[in-house]
Amino acid sequence: MANPAKYDVLGIGNAIVDVIAPVEDTFLTEQDITKASMTLIDEDRAQSLYDAFPPASETSGGSAANTIAGLASLGARTAYFGKVADDTLGKTFSHDLRATGASFDTSPLVNGPGTARCLIAVTPDAQRSMSTYLGASSLFGIGDLDEAVIQDAAITYMEGYLFDKDEAKEAFIHAAEIAAAAGRKTALTLSDLFCVDRHRPSFLHLVRGHIDILFANEAELLALYETDDFDRALDQVRHDCAFAAVTRSEKGSVLISADETALIQAKPIEKIVDTTGAGDLYAAGVLYGLSRELPLAECGRLGSVVAAEIISHYGARARKNLQQLCGLSDNG
Image (cartoon, rainbow, N blue to C red; front, top):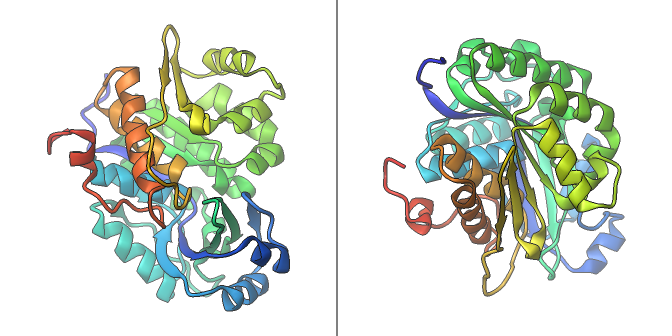
């Protein structure tokens, strides 16, 4: 049996600073931005888009880092691995994440690409269209893993967005092996439909051999198993993982384990302002529940509540006390 964990959840992902601005749909057309998806861009494109953006907010982001920040807000003990550069944005990211209470000690990159940034254009329908310069974050590799921290984390949660380099793929496999050897759990979020299309064989290998807990939205899950039958995809993921949580937008979400299925209603909100981080914070709520061994339905309720909070305002960090919002005690 594994020793008691020092951390409830360790996140591994792209360490990114989010630049978020409201725009009209015409801006997407003018700047050749693909709506409601994530597009990888180079440093020159990042600079030109940044210059074209209207006044924006700049906050530390990245999918797994958003999840870790949400978990910390819920009262979980957290840690994070991700690569920033030794530059101003890198220092901003590090300070912001540590301020949540998360442990973050990955060595910054020196004399290389700058810290990653994601330019997020939010249209009036609350859809976010992301243009991402990965910079230093894409150079994360096995050497950035701290074996002791993985062994000390009840759940190691990995972000599919990081999967664009072989070094990161190797790091994910290695981290999963360390976690398994220590009797810990592993989790993966598929992150984006385009990630699934780019990395389907690698994702399937990871899911089937190394992942206990899978997060996906409906489109990503269907793409992973190359089917348009949702029930069939659920049957397949139930065979591949001990647990899966699948979001379905206004239809809510479905959580499954080997012998149980929980259907969760989406929490209604007055107005959807910005969907940035909705899946990240949903994962935070579910992972918090799993770390406390709560019933499936309660894990799903927590995910739904914190996701609803995040889409009611700009940005992917909570503005309300999530513990109070979810009806949790200070000690979880």
